Each structure stands twice: as C-alpha cells, then as structure tokens.
Amino acid sequence: MDDASVRDAADALARAYATGTPIRPIVESHPGATLGDAYRIQLAQVREWARAGEVVKGHKVGLASAAMQRQMGVDQPDYGHLTGGMFHLEHQPIPHRGFLQPRIEPEIAFVLNRELTGPGVTAADAVRAVDFVLPALEIVDSRIADWRISIVDTVADNASSGGVVLGSRPTLLSTVDLRLAGCTLHSNGALAATGAGGAVLGSPLNALVWLANTVGPLGVSLEPGHVILPGSMTGAIGVSPGDTVVAAVAGLGTVTAVFDRQEDDR
Image (cartoon, rainbow, N blue to C red; front, side):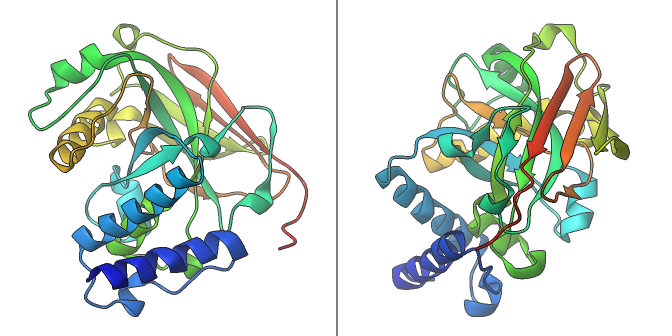
C-alpha cells in the first residue's frame, strides 16, 4: 500500500470510532494489504491519538492463545497500543456506548519497572523487568463489521483494542507460577469460561518476550511503568449494557468490570 492508501484506511477506522458504525474489512477495501501495511495503518492512528493528547501507557498481545486464534480465524499473535483513555477503574461503571461490538477476556497484566528492548530479549530479561502482575480484563472491540476480520484487519484496527480494567492487588512474579494459574470468568454470576495461564503461548511470560522482540526492531521499547497484556486465557465473551464480569485468577485474586445500563443511542 502506498502512503495515501494507508492514510485512507486509517481515516476509515477513525470514522468508525467517531460514528459508531463499523466498516467493511480492510482486506476488501484494500485487497493488496499486507501485515506490514496493517501495522503502518495502526501506527498512523496512534500518531493521531498522540496529537490529540493521548499517551501510550502500554501494549497488548492479541490472539496469543489457541482458543482466541480459533475464535478469530487467525494463526499468529499480534500486538496493539494501550493509551491512557482505554483504562477503566474496576467496580466503576464503564460506558457501554463507548464501544461498537465489545467482548471481554481475562488476562494477567505485567507492570514493568525497567525498559525491555528487543531483539535478543530472553525470559530471564523479562522476569527482571517485571515489577508486579495484576489480574486484568481486556475489553476487545472491532471497528470491522461483524468481527469479520483477518490478521490484517485486526492489526490495522490496533489489535482490536477497546479498554482495560486492572485488578487492585499487585502480586510479585516470584510468588506465582503463571503457567499453572487457573482462571474462571463469570458474567452476571454465571460461569462463562475457564482457562489457565499456560494457554497463552505456554506462559504469559513468553508473550512478553515475543512482544519485546517483535517491536524492538521497529524502534519501539517497552517502558518502565507500562502495562503489558499478554493475551487471553479463555475465549472472549460478549458484553451488554448492565453486565458485570468477574475474572478470578489463582494466586492473583479477582478483577471486576461493570458496564452501565445505558443503551447505546448513537
């Protein structure tokens, strides 16, 4: 894709954010788009958000589990940016109308205390860089109609990012085995899904290493204080106005997302 086509695709996604109306897949409007083009489209949006005053507060790894890859019909992870405006407080009402077609998934969030810059980052480097971990709920959303996405579409759409809710009890990485940490996901009191940390590339730590080594050659470092979401431990579930979703992660505690009851009136 040439620069004009990248800008056209980024503008179309920006209109979807503004109007609440999803667009057709990028691979249909730009049939020749590659994965590299998709990341250029993503970065064009991030630059616009920065100009509008948003600050990058971290990154997410998407499609890191076999469950999510099957659900989305893709075969590899991707990554996106987390900005300050994406973070919501747990137990506080989240405006459902701020999303187009939201789903939610449980994750283990890393909070860094030192920089990680790839390539060449090892698991040992990643362990040293983690300050603490938190249970988290990621709200994934798509500006692509009916979630009809390819890997190009989701990457262009900032890895289908929507929002983040972090738990409030930090846990040292040395006190929990992330691979064996079991997870339950409840929606309105009913069990919706179960999983474990090992579903995320064998360990969520592997996703952190993958991210650092993937973005490093692009000139991007993972910074101290950044929140890193390594990927979902279960498939994503849909959320509606008024829903309460609780994830419990063994050894880490719980995190709760509450959506307001106001219907989307856009």
